[in-house]
Structures are given as C-alpha cells and as structure tokens.
Amino acid sequence: MNFGLQHANSPIIGDLQITGSKSESNRLLIIESLFNNLEISNLSNSDDTQVMKKALTSEETEVDIHHAGTAMRFLTAYFAVNEGRETILTGSQRMQERPIKLLVDALRSMGAVIEYEKNEGYPPIRIQGKKLTANSVSLQANISSQYISALMLIGASLPNGLTINLEGEVTSTPYILMTLEMLQRSGIQGSFEGNTITIEACSAVESKKIPVESDWSSASYFYSIAALNENSSIQLSNYRKESLQGDSCLATIYKQLGVETIYKENSIILTKTNTDLPDILMEDLRNAPDIAQTIAVTCLGLGIGCNLSGLHTLKIKETDRLVALQTEIEKLGGDIEVTEDQLFLKPSKNIHQNIEIETYNDHRMAMAFAPLALKVPIIIKDAMVVSKSYPDFYSDLEKLNFEVSKGSDI
Image (cartoon, rainbow, N blue to C red):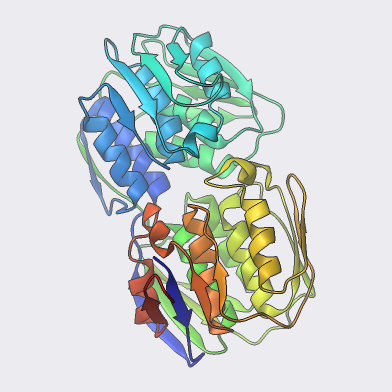
C-alpha cells in the first residue's frame, strides 16, 4: 500500500517512545536461547526480532527468516552448534541473493556441517547441528560485522571458548563492541584487543534482567525531521549518552546540520538551532552505514551536498542501497553519484513534489525519505515495509502532525 505524506512545516513538538534496538534485542535472544537465565525488557517489536523469536522456538526442520539479514547470520551459527538438530535455513528471494559464504566457511573450518541447497555461497542452507570443539577461527576483518558477531555469540557455548582472529582492517567496530558488551552484561567473559577477539567458555549464567536501549537507527529519522524543520523539540525515550550502538554518532553528525542533542536521565531531546550549514557534509560511515540513507536525504532537503564514504556493506543489504538512493534522489531532482563504497550528492535547491518513492523491500528507504514531506508532498510505495524494524513509524509521524494518507491509489 502507498502512503502520501505531507506537513504544514509548523513547529514540531513531541514526546515519543521508540521501540528497543533490534541489534541489541537479537543478540540477547541468541544468548538467552543458549543460556536460558535472562529476562529481557524493552525488546524490539520489529519484524526482524519477531522472526528471530519464532525461529529460536520453532520445532520445524525448515526455518524461514524472510528478509531478516541479522537473523540469517546469527541463526546460521546458532543452529550449527544446536547438537543433533537438522535445520534448513531459508529466506526471501532477496535473502537468497545475499552472500553467506564467508560465515559458512568459517564455521566449516571449526567442524560445522553446512551444505548449500541451491546456489553455492547463498541461502538456503542445510545445517547439521553438532558439538564443535575447535577453539579458534580466522576470517576477514572488513566484512559485515554480523558474521563476526554470529561467531562471538556462540563462542561461550563451545567447550573451549573461541578466539577469533581478524585479518586486515576492522570495520563496523561498534557492532563488535556491542556484541561483546551484551555477552559481558549476560555474565560471559571476553575481550577485543587489536585484531583478536576472545570469548571464554561458559557453562551457565546467573539469572538477571537486562534492559534494551531504544534504537538509534530509528532515532535518525527524527534527527532528520529536526534538521528540516525551523522550530523543533522532539523528546525520545530510553536513550543513553554512553550508548553501545554505533549509530549514536548521529548526535555529533547532526550538530553540523543544526540539531542539538540534550541528554536527560533516560531520554534525549532534539532541538533545532541556528547554525551555518556546511556547503558539503563529509563523513566516513564505516562504523554506522545504516544511517547513510537518512543523512543523504537530509542534505538533499537542506539544499547542501554530502560526500559519504565507508559504505561498502550497503551493496548487500535488503537492496543495493547505494543504487536505490541514486535512483530515488535523481527522481526528486538531486544530482548524485555513487561508487562501490561512496556517495556524492551535489547541493541543489529544488525538490520535485508528489514523487513516488520506491522502497525496494527496504525499510530504511521508506523511513529515510519520509522527512522530506516537510519540504514537498511525497508518496512512499509499499509503505508498511517499515514493520521490519519500526512498525509504529507512521503513527509516530502523525504525533508530530504529519498528514499520512493511506491508500493504494494515492
């Protein structure tokens, strides 16, 4: 269904409760399934987390995780150590085009039994769960951090723990640190020094409650709204200044775009300030690639340019996000070029209105472009794709006086 969005660009004042981080939630669900004694609060209500919960309790041989990339990576490792169980792990057509080979190779080197059902290097995969006794593994450091986190999450369940040797320059470091912190909060010991990650063996953890911080990726869309509106004060609950999430760098990045972040005890307040905008915003997003779409669209709305680098992992997301961004921004009248890992947007002042934004089965395409409704009316196609990470997105927009017209014929 298509949704039409527009806004009178009047002052925006609101107080929103954002769902828990799916990144933290999905890590904790794996740990809880391996060790049982965790009580998780503020769990994400995203499709990805619901898929993860269902997969972890499923007794079926075939487990379909649909579009959930995190679930595919984490569950590949989880089922590999689920002794005595055979699992066919599959997903959507796009998921079957997203590579899994590097993780499968790493697990096979540890003794895991995994076979490809269709195409070599891609899901679906057949996993014969068994006890793995290997205590070390090596893999490239510049790959998706989800591969590395998948191995970290099962490390403590192995009889001898696990040492992960990373080869080359490490990218997405914040997500590796998040995984380590989630393990440590759960009572599992580990370290990350240089290019070596060590997870100590653990037979059991003590019973404890662990709260999930709200999702900083979801907060990015409200940073964009605050930047594009002349008078904004938006409070978002369940955020910490000392966050584990890499996307918390939003506060620093958006300060350049006129958004001040005020930290309260358990929330943040985003306010618009008068500041001179850069002609071109330059950022290396290797540690926070998921906010690239939001930043590019914000810059388009502000009429400034941006040069964003460190985006190589966007090629293998729900869609090729760089190509998708280029296509949709050009429809809006923007001048943009992309490479394999960079994005170059030139400053421009005119935005075409009533443009239909294709979402490509990608939740972040829908949400990144939505704030542009502060500048021109737009149409988001297949709008409820946002349920993958943020089911309440449009109702929260309505709380900020966005007009959301729902219908397939808009």
